[in-house]
Length: 528
Image (tube, rainbow, N blue to C red; front, side, top):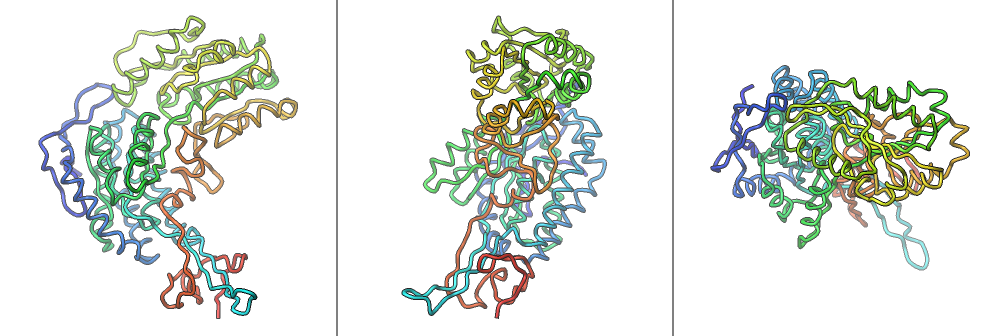
């Protein structure tokens, strides 16, 4: 499929502005040929107006209509075939295997939400029966369900061109809830975004969805993103990116006449604690697990292990030496974009500016936009004195903090901000005597991992991909898994309404045949 770089607004294409940009091949640093048209404010208004007009009709679609729409999205993304795989690799520099893995995950998320729509319990329908004879005041008939909030803006993520972008978890969960979506495509992989957007729009047309249920806007500046968040018809925002970007959007959203939520995933150093007994038993395995996680795709993951805490001993010294040796075998890797590479250079240099921070991997001469893993080390005392060392360095960089005792290690963990994950490598016996580490780490993270690395986020009911601020702006929900749909809804209660005027999920006959809470108990039953 040929790219044209236009903004896809409802069922029309626009390129009315005078400003364009190109994506870049991260390895060769050559500009790719397609000129992408920066969306104008007028085009952005058009997308929002269409989404607002489409909302009531789309929110009223039946379960089967929405499922057919999702099945068509699944089909058309898969039908993009090698075109999608090729542009993914060209714009990201990531491997074919990674492209296939992200496509598989994206399609898997679509299938997951087909199942969620089919099941219907995401609406959390509940019925409390009336008690007209209750004294001194009769109890009314009260029923409640979750309903979609309105048009949503989704910002594509730089490091996941498919799984967290145009048809990623934010977009698919919002569409599943009944909300139209406007994607502000990430400018580093605008071509990948265009192909996927065309697949979604084609699916919408084929299944008779209202025009405006989905739009895709291009922009390599901040103005259009800010304008979207300020727009009074936008009701919520999904964002995956830097703390700077996420907090900026949150401030804009909070200053609106009607503040709206920004569900942002914004960064994490994912602390890892490595205790002595596990090193005695599984030194090589622990080193290999961590090395693989640190160097995976140049460390460009939100679950990259950025901080590793150990207790001072000959074992921990050997551990650091072996980990550095293992990382030294990594060949140079291209980062996603020179802008990301520049930030990596700046942030890693800020750590090494401390004389107490020592680099233990071997520095190598590299071409621009390429890196090899960097492993540094410092003391717990230095870490506690310098808050900058706890900040994320996005890329293949990890800092090992050597603590003199358990008290210092716990103090270091206690100084951390909110994180997505926290890992502990230990034996069960060893950890029983150090439960304070579990409690301290649990207060900082959304996912606790035992003897494993943070990279690899399974999409399932029990997974939580979120954490206390600033890992995410709302620690209850994330873009991964079933509960992502709850972000785009609000509860509505219906009191004493005629049965035929109630939403189907709340009607007596339970025409959707879903699980509901009836007088406090889950049930499929119908009411008289």
